[in-house]
Length: 89
Image (cartoon, rainbow, N blue to C red; front, side):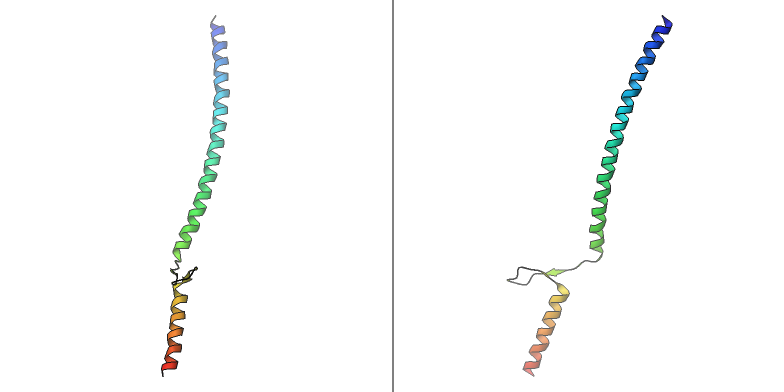
């Protein structure tokens, strides 16, 4: 009788081991998917942070559909004022 209980216990333990192995594999697969998603998200965030390191202020002139860099807008204004000064003098 004692050996019959041990045999049943061993069979039960073996069954539990197989179930735990399947759960572990599933968990490992889920962890790998999660790590991949987190890695991709981290890469996107790194790109955004890198873009913030060199900000570019943009300006949309009145009645325009597009934006331009503030530095370009100031250069254009400076050039127009300089040209106007030539006509005044």
